[in-house]
Length: 599
Image (cartoon, rainbow, N blue to C red; front, side, top):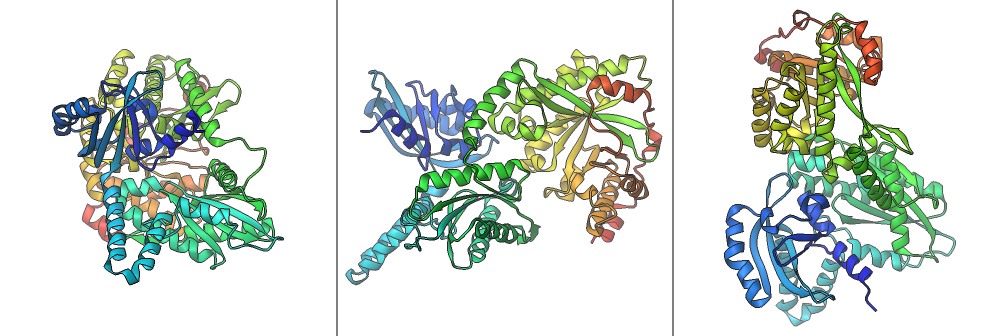
């Protein structure tokens, strides 16, 4: 007997976008496939009118064609249109809608949205397989096998898909010896979205194909590699002991970690791996995959690029994530966020120049949580907009208080991070302007930091937003420089005042010639375009000395101070004098000379 739980699972696991709306086309439910495809959080779309997700032309088509047709016939079939994703990009799609009667007698509209690209690719593959089947009666068996292969294999990589993997797991991989175990390794690529956002989906597909070949090679023809979806792979192999499984995990990590060249750029990838084991005679494929998935999330939590073995005492990370999301929403609303401040020092004088505002969460049961514990969740769910606005307001309020304090003899610059979602928020400029006015804080003392990857998501939108922010008089910085794919043209065209060198490069100063060369080049590049160079993650005096010799302007890190609560930092500030502008040099050789030295 089919239950409501069964229908919910079908709804959530459908391979296409699936929405439910009321008669006014207001969205009441959206499945995981639609949210993943568009980048929206569930809270973003629930309560939204479906036509708002369409460009203006498609809205008119919807109101004059689709809506009346549904009203007359109760059905609309495969209307070609575009859907606006969370980043404002247009995605070609096919929309089918049908009116349905609920068990309570009311009506609702069930909407199915296929990505046009995926639908066309799938249809072309089916047409090709069907054509081969119809060419001759003699080849019908082979054509039938082709259709079966298509149903059980991923069209991009040729690996078994989710259905194919289920078949493999259920039969225990070719009747293994009874003494052997089955190991399932859930492999999830780290930060794959950054490659898609920076280089495009074609580059992302190429990376997935390379990873698929490397994983297959690493199993040495003794196991099975499957691609479930997106950047998720599963490796299944017979083993004699746990050490066999962990050795395989190490080989898989090594295979993924090797650099690869994609569209002329060297890309380094990593993965997080979860391991689950069972006796071959006691196969429950669903449970085994879920256990490996849970272990993979624990590997992510440990910092990524590692493996973890499933612990039966572990709780479900998906449930934990939903619980944490609710707690975070409550924490934002009830004032559980705390802002700590890390000094930014003039490298030449070791005098304080300003501070960077860093958010913490005072969780009622788990204590003080670092950003790594909740920022990704806030970004994915859309809570980052409210969280970011509150942190911005508190940092400006604190900066204004320091500005008025007799104990602080000079104004202190405040640096605040902006997320990718905040950058595309049309209300961002107004939020910043209102906070500055509310606390009577001079705009030139505020610096807004944007990651390189966030800028590259949509350079045109980023340029418009940054230009508007710059008009307010605030400073702008590119954060984590060197970890993305920004070009020199973007660096020159954006109204940037600072370039922040990522801590991963600063960490290698004095030990790694490559990192030292990158840091030196970044400093020269910043000066060549007339902006400041700021080094993150300075932890030793040796690193500070090296940065001084390279001409770096500002630095921050544990060598100077860890992030401190404002009341502790106030005492810290009184023992330092703010650097004067004259101590920060932007003199540099011409750009042509710099590029010649780099190239």
